[in-house]
Amino acid sequence: MRLSDLQRKDVININDGRKIGVIIDVNISMEGNMTSLVVDGGGFFSKFSSHNELEIGWSQIKKIGEDVILVSVDNL
Image (cartoon, rainbow, N blue to C red):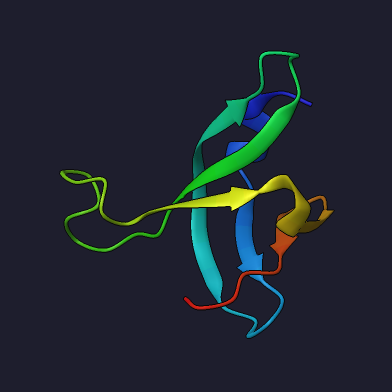
């Protein structure tokens, strides 16, 4: 799967059913494994600031589906 494929999917929090945002980047370990997703939480100023970025660790990803990525994130 390519990053561009992931970026087309909405990221949904399974704890409350809310859309968190869309993937703007991924973090990769020195060994080449994806360690986390960087999600843009949206908002008017999101294009001008990194304050709405959320890093979601690989262990928080529960399912990557055809249209969405389901994650478990507390304290949003």
